[in-house]
Image (cartoon, rainbow, N blue to C red):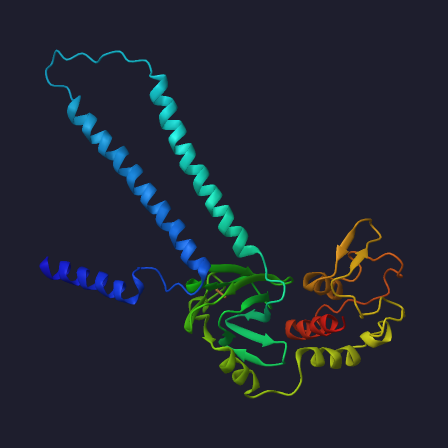
Length: 325
Ligand code: CUA
């Protein structure tokens, strides 16, 4: 017993020394706020539990049947008490909702001019691609104190990109892009998990994130540089896959819209309404060109590229469109 107590005390001591918490290290500002909210929920639950269970035990003992002649008094209700035990929890629940909503809002607002990193998931590995053309697998590097936006998709089943130290987790879904963002303010290596069961090696689908100084990041980007940026790879595909036949890159209209200035523009749909051209819009359009035809262009002319482009190639093509501002 004493040995166990000692072990427990040592564990608490180690946790204290490591940063004062049983939680994973806090690598972002949001992670700290997230933990405060979590602690609040835990303490409120604990206190409510003590009041409830403690009160119950107290009443069981105090009002137990003492003699065979004891009669249960008739009590119908107490309006004031009932109001209190409804109103006080309501205040706490609203506070939890408000606080949670405020934090979630911050976590889901993507940085406008952040560093974009593409994440490609497949059974059972994580691949990363940068605008510079740099790619890596199983690990990636980001500069400290820089807003980072991850644009993620999967080549097979649903995965989930989970960085415990950033307190962020987002499903990675085949056929579309999802995103998550963070601003790391701590140097170091951080573990990444897949948090959605995706087959036999799900538990081994790990990756490491290295948060380094801006200088080291630039250096890392230059190591094993393949020479072509993502956009240049996209330009190659633009020529080899035949996009060039119908789409100009100088603003002139051929069969389809020009790619110059396309990204971020608004497109009027035949079915009415408009859509903004973003990563997901282009991804959908290249694979399903006739799902949402655009006003002013012939319908049914563009062939689908389903099965002809890998997710990596789609990313490169979209980066090429992005570069033609
Ligand atoms: Cu990928 Cu679990």
